[in-house]
Image (cartoon, rainbow over all chains, first blue to last red; front, side, top):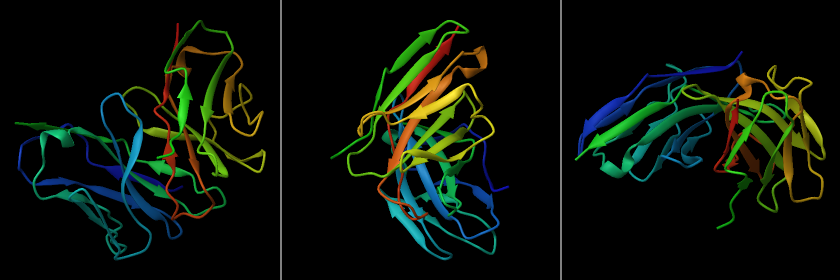
Length: 113
Length: 115
């Protein structure tokens, strides 16, 4: 079945460092891809999405490009802030009748001042 | 901005007891979901609900689980006889319509602790 694999954390960075969180997927169809963020004590919030190959999703300085050839959707940010500390989840929607989300394991990002 | 709400935020129950987790999806949304996240593990799909019936359920969603939209605003998840392994964070989500491009809006979750 469809699945998402993302790099294990925790990822610890200093403020203003460059961030990459790797995400790869396996899907039989043409999924949409998402990054969700979970701040401490809160629910999941959509960070960005891409719905077809070569689309780039972006929001709050974060970017991810839907790469069909490498089945990847890596999350990047040029300069992280302490406020970016959270758990980041890569997910796909299989485009089936219910569009359920299939999540990766989540990556904890800790940004130190 | 409209948001999905869930109550309670934390529920402690004894093994074998029934629990009902409540969600109020965004008012014009048509598709509803429950997910769960066992501590330290990935978020897992449980069930989707559309047009007053289950449209898909996972292997996790066995006969101990049921969902209901009793009054047009609430969306509930019932676990009939809780087990220790049901301890998890349960998230409700909703989306305005079908289609993989539509964002699912998540509630803040209910932490269920089964003792």
